[in-house]
Length: 309
Image 1 (cartoon, one colour):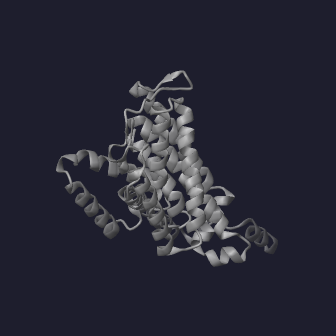
Image 2 (cartoon, one colour):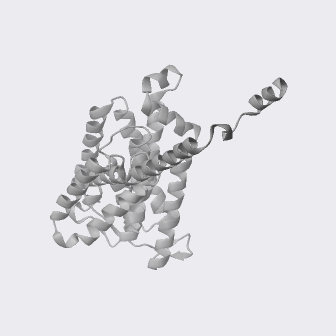
Image 3 (cartoon, helix red, strand yellow):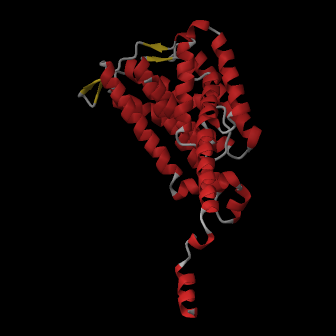
């Protein structure tokens, strides 16, 4: 369930970083704010689980639209620093605010029942719900990427000046994509709060933004399955090496360095490139081995040959 939450979070980040080309350092604000709102609504207000999740997602979407409106006007490093600064505002608010309980966080969040029917206190039921939510989020990202809107985002990533010259309002497209990414990050944060029955400062801390960037880079930027693979690798590393304490961060850094040096396109991107090159080599070999007379001719060429004869 942790891998599913992190994978959805990474897919949301990849929508902005991989397909729009916006390097953001503030996605922990959306993930953590949704977790806090969902946990508070469930633990204090006693609202139904589905309504708690909707509230968390709604808050993260609003914050994402606000942050995007403020930051989209800048590009590159300036955009990244603005998103980082805005995310730190959310972090310090969580530290100082009373309803977030500071360093203790919101604990013992009740899972409740989904639609009054599915008992989420059963771990198997909770797993299947998390799986369905992840698959729905993944399908949503896939549909966005392969839609005309997604193609416009790719054109803005490749050559924003030319996209503007063709009539696209680049800032508007980027703002919509950024807001959608914040919304999906909120879904991941809300599910995390319900699954682990906890919302803490770690959810809004800078390292959460760094982790989701690391997942995307290791898996493969701009690849649909890249964030899923990256999230799986990071989650497994954190679990299996937890006994090493603070050294886990050092090991994560070493993995990141190795991926940058030897897997420039990430795990999935490198595999896709290898398979594409192998297929191209096979086609080239077949083309060279085929006799000249055996090469297929077009219908037009064949018709001309018959007419000449």
